[in-house]
Figure 1 (cartoon, helix red, strand yellow):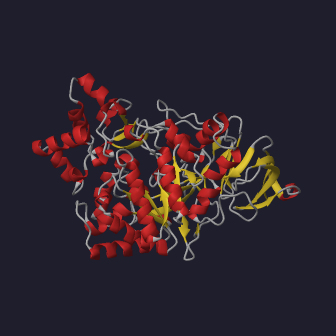
Figure 2 (cartoon, one colour):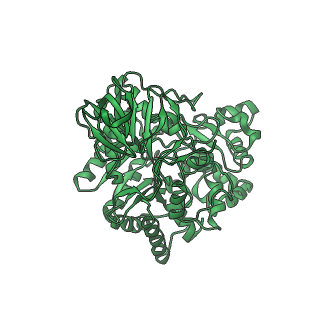
Figure 3 (cartoon, one colour):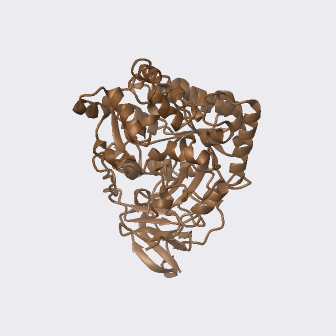
Length: 546
């Protein structure tokens, strides 16, 4: 027996036309789509007037720890997200060793928080995926993070890798993929990944491509030099033969206003040459990162402790100021820091809680201080754990890029801090409500395809991303007339409207608009044939502790 979603409008994730049908779920599978299935159901849910679609795929998520520390994971499941891709931007928690882990925890505490050394019991990709399989809200795939691998092999110093070190890194990447990772991420404005040259990246991507994975870089600049940075990633993919998925493919900061057409032309030319390219974006203008990320790369060589000493050294501090305020720091995308655009979104030091929601310029003015000195003071007092928003986007670029036929959805949502970016709670309903229904940039079928089937194809998810008998019952039911994001920059942790039901592997995660206790998600692992699917896991058997 199963559950029947009766009389809904099926938008099946293929981009094809909508149709009215019943959808029968038995166990963790879609058993039937069409009429005459009601007799096989022990629960019937009337969804007439609502859309039944595949669960949404967040191609760029930062839920690596949040899935485990806050099992309800309401931010994502309430949006209809049933699969997330973790290990992003070149920095995550596997593979690690006991030397790398403490530095890594501090380096990305502003992304993920820091639950403590005792919580992070895994070291390998396989062990991390096994930990996820103990019970998570939604499904998760994982990218081997290049910066973490580089830290393992080369340390945190600003230097090129030797050929022997590149060979070792390639072995680490192959091992991670053999253990279930779907590809390689990179963070080329973050240390230590930013110290890698194109030859190093191409060598690692060649290993990824051989195993059927893809390369997902946060490239070297989203500001000055952004188009050159995109071109470098296309070149790496073309040289290595590896598929390319461009993470949060935006063109923001002042120098890039109105230049989306140039990026689209670059990508279209590469696709015409046979380069396998997809991309993801979030449907908002501001970006989000950590305050320490805007520092120049040379300042961060050696890790957090070395950077702290440079911030206390007058000569080094003068050089950092010049990079940030005169030349444009490579950590700040080659753009001179505009203190009025940098807003504190979260802190780790409770004494600094009053700074959240304020810009560096505002904090400095209120204290009668210089903005650069204020920035340094915050970094030191918060032990480099400060999260920020950067208000630097351009709406015309956002709209043009999201319409590209290789586009998918990615929230890039940070889930820590008092006022994180609202994209963590609102990305997918914002696509459906604001950009599809209100602005008409997509048909509903096309929009759902961007957020489901197309992303599933990139991940080689043979059993997800479409509403079809025999596939996994990852489903979202939403009202096309009312679905909308309610998360705002002032109040970001707000559940979306118009999404009454979400099923993960056949279990209701959202039922009547309310979060259930089900933890039916699974780690989705790359298999030897290159496809991605769950490993061994009890079907729908987990619930979070009461």
